[in-house]
Image (cartoon, rainbow, N blue to C red):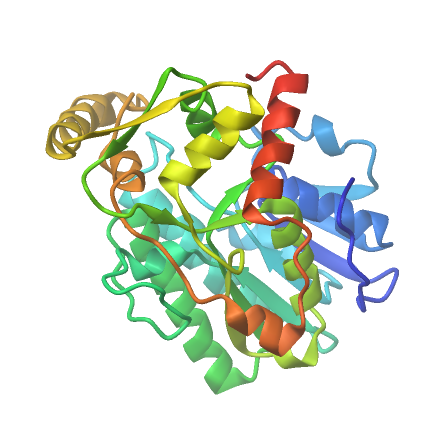
Length: 339
């Protein structure tokens, strides 16, 4: 059951969603449509839109960084939810990351500023802009230290937007999601599958703190920030109130699956080395590496955040605790034959 919050977005409001066919974007789009919004969505010609075909969406086929596509898609729009992103796409190099994250943000924001009735630009960044958290938990003011081209261009886009808004008065909100998961997610599905193994491997000797956010809660926060007065021109790290150890994630999932998994720790450096080799070999051919350094880092770094701003400023009440969300997601995977 979807968590559709009370929305102050007027029924019939025209909204542009980028990244509408993605895991998070599709749920957000469905919630907005069911709340009575008129949806515009930019999607590549290769993007699959079948899962949203039951909704009244006006699709604009093209690239989110194409001026002509953006101009037509933005006509009459009052709100923008900018989710489009390049994430773990083997063929996407520095140029494509810059286009999708930075150039698109500039185009959308500059076009929004020409619309007299425009209300708010909800920009989806990532906690990855902070990089490794040396002394967790980190809040929204923690320094930026992006570690790869995805994080670097996300940081560049966010910084540009804030500077642009400061000089032009564009109303905005920035959301930095933690690790997004939930029914239908394929990225953290690997962790759920690992929890079904007889042993659950953890790399290195750290606490391996991780911060999760259920996609249902994340999309509800996005909708809330589009109209909440206290969210205007603010940034929010969007994650559950508490981080969770990777070991606890594995044990929670294993317990739900009826497995008695054993946690083992392995040295991290061989996996980082193997990831570097795989990336070097696969990238020239546009092949997704079977293992890569960013995924290895998932098992080694502490990423814990202070998410109290969401509750203190917006009064948001989470639907899913870490445990409840992991159990619900594991059940969905089992019921749908993914586990």
